[in-house]
Image 1 (cartoon, rainbow, N blue to C red):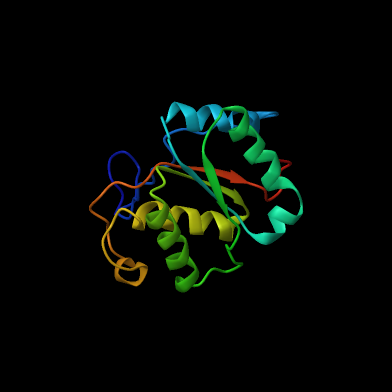
Image 2 (cartoon, rainbow, N blue to C red):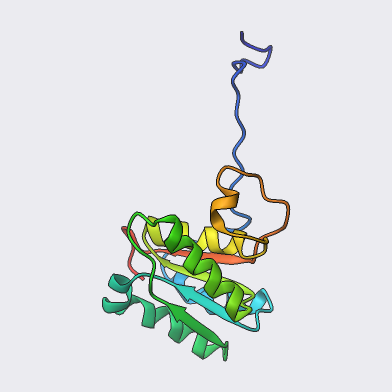
Length: 150
């Protein structure tokens, strides 16, 4: 069945990020973006490969330049398990972080999104698989490294 607007009956909607900054030098705005969120404590999540490649240092330098308090968590794993996601949630909860920044490929960024959403909930990650969450998430910034230069 097709509507009078030409859409099929199986139309879906997709909402994306509130703000996307891209282009040459866009990474340089990361510190200012965190500051604009009025963050007092930032958690930067990545994996060991990104850290070893020196990409993490480039990002944390931006936070240092803005006098932001931050910690890093370099334990994101490829094809993350629920246990890995739970460890990230526990880190966010335990550190009372008010912004989470992710640096890495798709797997690391999945961990950041999960941590930012589930950390505001009660309980464990497994409880929320496939469930619409009632509370807002902790603000997060994603810095993909796949195919990009940081």
